[in-house]
Image 1 (cartoon, helix red, strand yellow):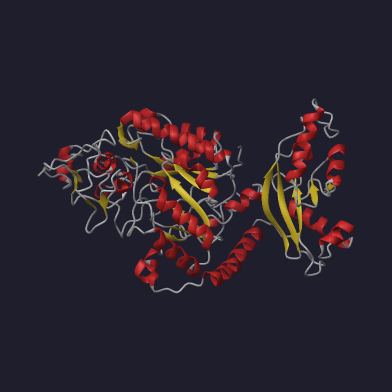
Image 2 (image 1 turned 90 degrees about the horizontal axis):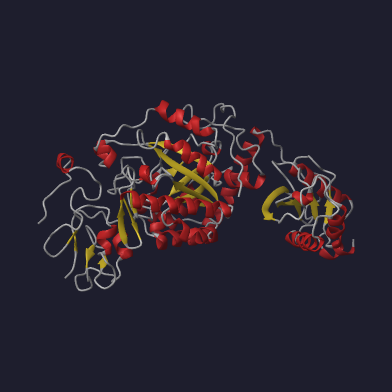
Length: 500
Length: 92
């Protein structure tokens, strides 16, 4: 699946909430993304530079076990004073983690994202990791879930990841060449054996690449993290960036090696040089030609809480959480108000004004519309649309609901539209299948539509509409909603609709 | 015959999840092996699973007190460096 990437070239932000200067904020970076992707990243501090000023994340340390050794990691992870990946103060059981998440989410309403990132590898702790995700998706459905992995066990868990509605996955990929990998990973645990050196690295790389492909095939957003290790993978990361982009990774985050001797890691003890800020930036710039780079990463702890760059973990130790009373239903209401305010502010910054449903009486029924859109515009020919974006218009306004995939029935000729492509039989069944995909929608907005699909859509009770070609999607949806209202078809009952 | 866990253990749970005999249990200050259950994986696997996944050198020993993962064997850090950083000790 081809995913669009965030622009690298947007101008730097003014002000904002980030304590650090030069965090590379790019207010326009999300503007050109299709709505369904923007909806996934606009409140995720790790996927959107802009979001990290406003939205917070937390990690819960339920995953202590690991299945590989990295030379930049020391598995003696218990430390309260250091802030770096792999370090935590207390490992939690899934039950403790859920209490902690609910407490933090109630206390910090702008916390939108819960990640499991260690201190080992989440997918080497499948029972603890998935129990946490399962319970949270039930009890706190307004929290986005994400997971970070070394990739070794990824292929076998991709389906469970998809099933738990986890739509952000980070894979740490430091190399695509086993010879390079052998200098980074001394061993892996694979099929009941410890496998050293090049052979271990080869298996790890294979599983990472397979897992990446499987995730992007399922439409799950993947961020790739790479640790820049001077003299080991610095040049090589340019190649990594190209390959992961080709496989559909959404964002590449190159982080500097942390190698202090007192951390007790291989690179630390062997006094391996850390990259200078210039080296890091040069490499990020070199990779930026290939894909979007994340430049605002703070390399946080596996139990971090709060905005990127801050850690409020001390306020939420288990002894404090145990005595907190959390009414999550009430908290969710408060959280929604806070999130909507922030999103509205961000939209306003981007110059997006949400169309208002003025003149529509309260209590009017909501209408689902399908849009053949591209980059926020009603820009696709009905027969060329690879997916339809589903929007709901109601007296509250327009909101994005989901995307539904289609199969192309149109061969792609310029003057397509009369259904006269090679195999009439196959064409017909595909068209009909696509119309079934639109079930529940009352209108299809597209830039152009042929005579045959027009008739079939009408017969299926879906009104085709090509009158808003090249208009912004949300404005077009609201305009059509108002037309429906004006024709008196928004009266509450479904019978009215059928009778009309 | 049974393996044992030493004070080097960091309580990461990795061995618990791979033990075919459920022989490893949580305890303070570190995990322990139930020597009534441990078979050193004979009949199940070609190598003891706890020692094959354990990331910490010197954390698993056999009945003779020998390290299954001696100093330097997992990280590749040379012995003299381990000594310098206080990360080395002799087997029992």
